[in-house]
Every structure is written in C-alpha cells, then in structure tokens.
Length: 291
Image (cartoon, rainbow, N blue to C red):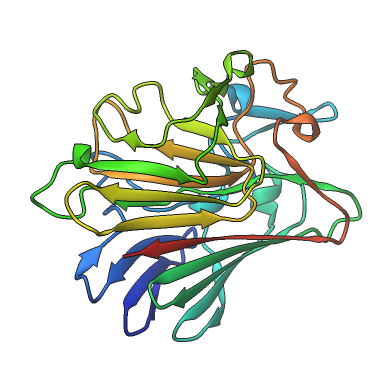
C-alpha cells in the first residue's frame, strides 16, 4: 500500500513497506526526481537504514558473548510500517519491535518516520524511542536515489554534486565494504562530477562532524536539480552502482556507518554508533528540495 501527499507544487508517494519514498514529483516542472527502482540496476528507491548503516564484518555483531547476524543496512527497509498519522501533506509511519526483529536485534524500540510536504520541500524526521531500562545502541540513515539525468536528452555525466559550505572534509575510504580509517584523508573538491568512474571504488563517504551541510545535484544544461540539507548527520554517503551504471545517484545522510576493517564487532563499540539512554527519544531530520 502506498500513500500520497500533495499540494499545488509537488506530490510525494511513500510505500508502507519500508516507509520508502518512491516518488517526488514537481507539478510545475513536470519532472520526477526519484529513481524508478529498475531492478536491472538497483531495485530500491529510498530505503530507510536501521538499526545499522552499512555492513557488519562477516554480517555479525556481538552483545557480550552472544552473536547476532544482520545483513547490510539492517531490517527496517524490508518490513511493513504502520501508518499512524495521515493528512494531505503529512504522514507518519511507525515500526515497532517484534519477536522477528529481536532475533536480529534483541531490543524493544519504536521507530517513527514523519514526512511533511511544504511547497517543493520534503521534511523527513526520524524519531526513535527506547522503552528499555538499558541503553539502546543504534544507527539510522537515509538512502534516497535521485533520477539522473532528469531529462531524456541528457547523460548522467552532465551532472555534478556539490557540498556546502565549501571546506576540507575527511574522506573515509572503503576496503571490501569496510571503513579503512588508516587511509582517511582531507578532501576539498568543490564539485564531484558524475563520470563513469566516479564510484568505481564504491561509495564516497565524508565525515560531516554533525555540522549543517547542504548537498546539491545539478546539471550543466538547465536550472533543475535537487538540494538535500542535513542539520546534524555525522556522515554523508554518495553512491551509484558500478560498472553496471543505472541512471541515478544516491545522497545519503547517515547517523552511523559501516564497520571498520579492525572492528571488535561489539555493537556498543561500533564506530559511529549512537547510544540512546533508557526511556529516552532520539530525533533528527533532513530536507529534500526539488527545483
């Protein structure tokens, strides 16, 4: 089941399964901005990453002496959410812990995702509640894939990404899908061009240090594009598949990250993990604007 939010400028469609954004359409521009989800290239649109972001070493983590298995990006993207609020321009999707989730993540939790459409802007808020009398270790992230090119007479190579404010940021390289912190470096590129080789070494990951950051997707040929703003995400991932390149690019704000090469595999020690106090609530948000 899908739900649509709409106003005079834009419409948004969200699938109850995974609370996944599947369409962001600009009525005045007559353009769709979200990737179609063609399974030949990548069969998703904008999955929610929870309770981990990225990979676990050997798909395994430990709590004390107990091992748990979890695949890349966690399980939220593959479960049905409950629609707990709906209006013309707002909706909330909620996922509750269950016996099934506890097989992989032995905690009670409540994850709510709030979508709000304001003109050509979509505000997405994550709210995680810890009802346990013990701390809750977790990560959460977004994985929206944007259609590139936006127009049929263009190529993906006509587009580029820019991060602002312009400054040096720490680039975190991957090695076999895990963070290689020993080879991190400062990166100050003003533009990241979407050439065929841009993602040959997997995702481009930057440490934002939880600073407010804006990432824009632009074309050299016209004024249409995407702007994604995060106020406090620790990391940003930029990705498209390689070498079988689909016509999309992902801009991914993350509150958490993949395991490091030298991880202990203890969840509470995981690099970038968040620890939510007993009976507390974590809230964060990001905004997508289309123009």
